[in-house]
Amino acid sequence: IGGASAGPITFVGDVTRSTAANITLTPGTNQNLSFGTFGMSATSTGTITLNVSGTGTITTGDNIGNDLLAGTVVINADSPELLAAAAEEVDRVAKAGRKVRIITFGTSATADIRVSDIAQTVAGTTFVLSTGVANHPDHATFSVPLLGAHNAANAAAAIGIARLLGLSDQEIASGLANTTPAPMRLQRVDVPTRTLPVRFINDAYNANPESMIAAFATFAEVARSLSEAAG
Image (tube, rainbow, N blue to C red; front, side):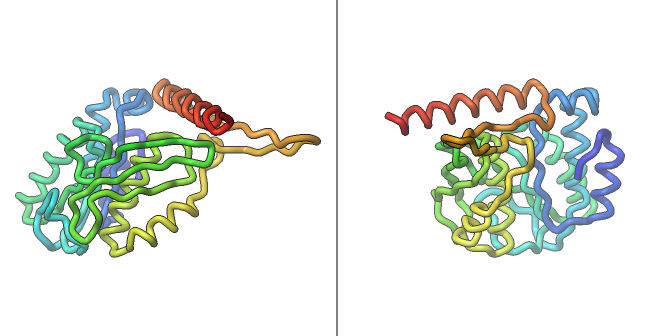
């Protein structure tokens, strides 16, 4: 669900009435241009919480189970504005007699699903996931064939919802391994030549200052990994 203003996000959220929702919003220039400020963007996106349906109890943190009786929102812990906006919506939902629970993900030490030890090579991104969720290991290593440290956090959000749906970590790892990169978003491209193939990374889809910084950081880490592999 996306939009350039609060109205479409609220409307589509009301139509979908999801059992679980994943909110990945992070601060960026694009949000400021569309909504005026990132705070306004976070508040608008947080309204998705209002439209997640469930019949269970509000729980957080270590009380996360594998059922979806409570509508569940998996939300980016690295965005304080977004967390604050979602918390306000949870209060509104509770006062209306409905239930929703919040599971947080990200690199923050307070995240329910915490991402650490992110490493990138030309093949993709590997990371460690730490969680106190019942029936899952405290630490598990996952890989995704996507470049960009931000995709470790995106994958963590997907893992959180997949676990809620009852998938095993082995099934989740298999699904992540088959992820197809979006065209022109840190996309690896191999061009055959008469001698050795030439590989380049195409990140030409769209850009803002934050995405450019992320791309340059990715280029530097991939180049470093290639240098280390070459000895």
